[in-house]
Length: 296
Image (cartoon, rainbow, N blue to C red):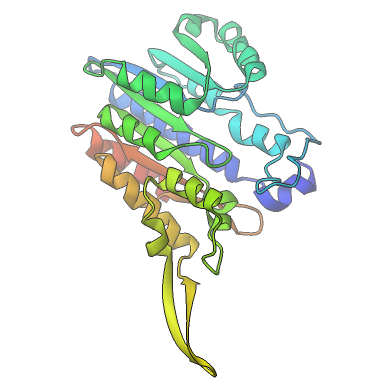
């Protein structure tokens, strides 16, 4: 991997993320193999189905997420689809959602590569939020169970989508929360956050109460009288706990120890969270996920 990609994103965090997912998928299909459910694997940012590290990419014009150039996004999104298809006990259905038409075209190659599973693979060229909400609401979940992998490269996953997924009471969800690459960067030290950023944060957290959690007004005595200023109180850990607690308010249960995925400098990039959807299956699901997460 070129050094310019190593600096921010680290050498092994992607491997950790995918290893955690693989271990859970293997345990999940084994645990439910004798149950009368149709098992689905849903990948909402499926990419091309494989990981590819490019040596150059196109910058986004110096915007807020300029460091998330095309080559990094390629790394983030690829790999999970093929990992799911290689799980020894196959799922009954694989739903791959991808917004890029080009990547969807490459995803279709998986039907040739995994010929015996071709009729189980469904590829949807769509925005993950709109498609997932519609899919979850229009599917009968009485005899279906699923694992959902939400792996965005930024703040694309809206809280409304998370809530709709939780309301199925049938979907176990792994979600990559953009702790360091996005959310922490928007939380300015002085609390003077542009309206556009506030809207983005509220859309991700599902409430505007995050401001009162992360900031506090403090009054100090100055030469010309009392001065009131806003102070940022949150750390990476504070933000991580807040988001995981938010997940716990809509899902049946969550793993209490989500993994902070770091870059090569030891700075948090993402928080890898697990939330269990089904009341009966939640205890064992969280136990399995927590055991895997503790290994990292």
